[in-house]
Image (cartoon, rainbow, N blue to C red; front, side, top):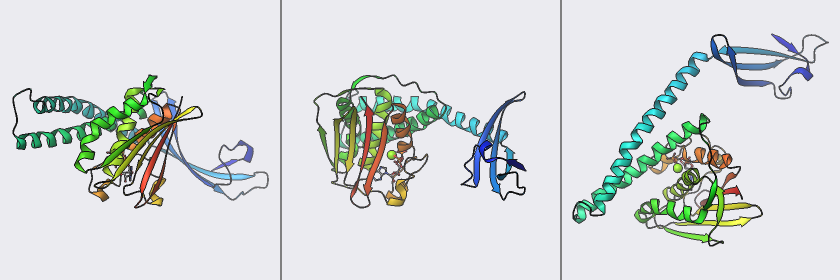
Length: 289
Ligand SMILES: Nc1ncnc2c1ncn2[C@@H]1O[C@H](COP(=O)(O)OP(=O)(O)OP(=O)(O)O)[C@@H](O)[C@H]1O
Ligand SMILES: [Mg+2]
């Protein structure tokens, strides 16, 4: 049992119960503890508050978790190389580099190419999430034309829109809009937001992508008139592994928005969503100029 005076306590006495994690460097190496702390009624007049704190040694569990994550990251990294090679080979075949193709062959190769691209995107999200969580990401900002970057990302995902006869409109207030971002990392954000807009919007839906300057920020919006998001799901949307894709008979890891938020925040920006179920959604990214 720990008795502590109000002013010595790091925890807000108004709340009562707390859980937190602690890490210590010891002579045995790093040790991790889970702490649970509860307020108790003061038993003596000279103490303002009383607390019970229980510490649980979770070092072994943390080590297993770290090993599991490293294993997934290594596997993901190794899988990306053959998938990238397959994409390249399929693109060459479709371009007629190995001779002409019959219509049926072209259709099958196109479908295989699209599945491979989708798999590549999932592997990329998994690996990037691991890198961001381990602090292994350096942001290399360089002046990048954000309008061009959006167009090139869209070109990679155009097949999704074509499959569903969706209409995409670009509204760029500046002809070329150079902003300081890491183009490789920002590309992940844009690909995730465009693919969500296309995936969660039905046949013949409309998607509007716009960029504009507002004060000292670049505002990028991805608006769709798709299925929208129920109110009670909005707050958890940017959490890791939050995916409601199965509801729409889609496959998703639930990492797209989580990772996008991490990347945008690493650039000093913000990402937000407005949505109405059945009417559509608008995801807005604000980046400092
Ligand atoms: N434009 C949108 N319209 C409607 N729902 C959306 C939209 N964007 C995201 N969502 C909802 O938010 C959830 C989380 O999106 P997120 O991109 O993080 O994961 P995902 O698309 O399920 O999987 P992935 O990791 O493959 O992107 C989705 O499952 C979907 O339910
Ligand atoms: Mg997604």
